[in-house]
Length: 136
Image (spheres, rainbow, N blue to C red):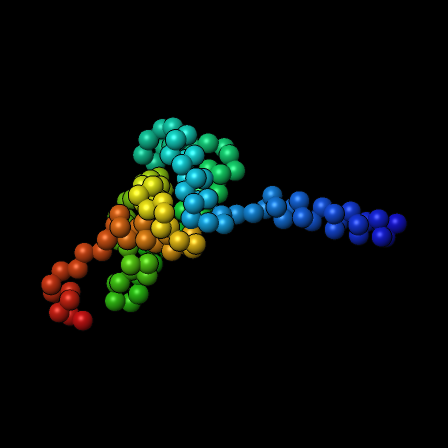
């Protein structure tokens, strides 16, 4: 009986691992985020996204990246090097990644986080004034 239970657990493990997979590549995130952009309804802070695995993976991943995007060092320099406005919506950040992924489809690289950071840097560069540079 014990070996039957162990066999069942081991037999189910690969299926459980496969269904628990997250975002594996920048292209996979781009495809998932496309489902959000295409399937959203509503506007502003009151939008609905498709209730699909891909849309939810995109939403969750990008929400984490949005949280990281506002972190700054003591001197005010943003951790990710990008400066999205404080009122930027998650949908706007998702749209900026989708736009970046379309424009850079051949050179997205292998790191999803790096691709998102590059997209944020392109869409929301931090502007430094001459006075800021002189303070360094």
